[in-house]
Image (cartoon, rainbow, N blue to C red; front, side, top):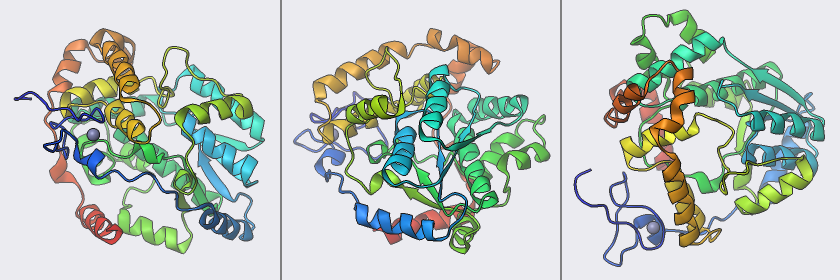
Length: 364
Ligand SMILES: [Zn+2]
């Protein structure tokens, strides 16, 4: 970073983040263009759910469960509000907190659903995390792809018509256009490690030749379940209100040491935030908290306080445990934070590139 960053007077974003500009009134483009979240509408959702129920499969919907707030809330809605027959599963990424595991246990018991643990060979997955972190500065790509592929496989195996995702409208925007979930890019990164062979990569990817187009066609054909962002259809309660509801209805617990609890389920998350902070100029919290300010869930002062608390925690000494799990040292971490942006971006697959552009265009 060269010059001093200018920070928006309404939220916490600054102009050294990708795609952020501050206007002459001191307001960023995200605040200036802000439109309050308008849900698609429950009637649309009910139509989709009814259509799935009419198929009379063993399960109407698959719900990926991380033990965090959003996915537990989706399970609550699917079971208690819409009475769907649900299969849940959890991709055990090896970094799950005990609290997340106990939340999953309680949510599954409370709702009486079937639940599947998905877990790869720990040594293989360890190599993959370590390699992507060392070579591309990212660890979340492996987890994201692992979650996605197992959801497709389970929806195919059990012929489940819907996959209900817990992506929150307030989590949009991460300030990097790095395509960390792209399969071709991921394969190129993993190829740099000779001890990861093609068989391992294929085992991990489950569908090693899948791309946006084939995935889209398989979904239309009904081979894969249709992904629905459930939280986009309904008025969204605040982070705090969801927490209160889940404690009452799902025996859910949240960590005591943080007021902001969205990703406590993964104990590698602070490390990823530290790396992002250095590589992109912001950890995930900055856009999340800025979204919460715009949604009037918290004031700028409260957000700033939470952000400063977070910053105080983002110190290399706090990552010793997770670094040693990855066979890495503090010195490796410093090297990782210096990996340039857009590393391996030339490897992103052509079909994915074209399809992403087309999709953006259609959305407009
Ligand atoms: Zn702003």
